[in-house]
Length: 247
Image (cartoon, rainbow, N blue to C red; front, top):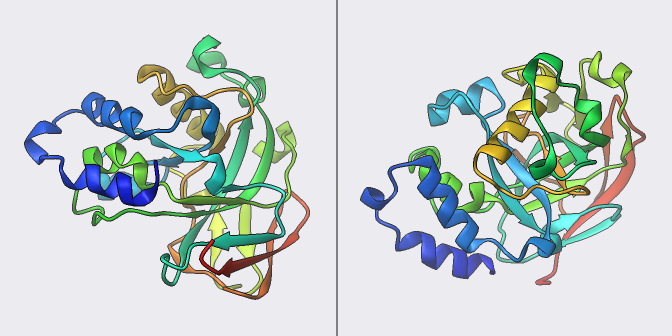
């Protein structure tokens, strides 16, 4: 389903019919693509600021179509209709297990049992609604305003990485830093909460899917038609160019 079709359906939903998180996820699933077309997941509710804005203490997820997921790409094409694209700096983790098959015990949870790779990321949201004004349930129904996800260079996840304060940057905007200190929980706590939400609402996260952590920077205007470096303190930098040419 393309963005215009999604917008049309979301615009027809009445607020009185959207009273629970379960109902919001039911609508999201009806809008989602076939499971084999999902490559990644957008996440929210993992930072103090989004928890306050949407009055929640847990994460929420929305699927990202494989055509809007850019992994190992040096040149990225966004539609011309996306005016002045803005994005958030994030950290993405790759699942090594199907979530529906795992057992979660918080007391003995180890993220390395369920995730194997980590990468810096830029998440570009898309929605016709105004958030946070429209509220959490509309956000979830609207696939959590999922738009595009750009991954930088991945590296193997390790215990040492979890002990670090993780940072993500773009060299053209050095003053803006994605910082894991902005998470509401520890990094492992964030990943546990994401898996818990997925299992609770049967979202269908699978081995090989990338899960992006939620914005750990403010929303920033992205460089267009020029090379920039997407960097982090846990993986090698790589050059990326975002183009707009109607594709």
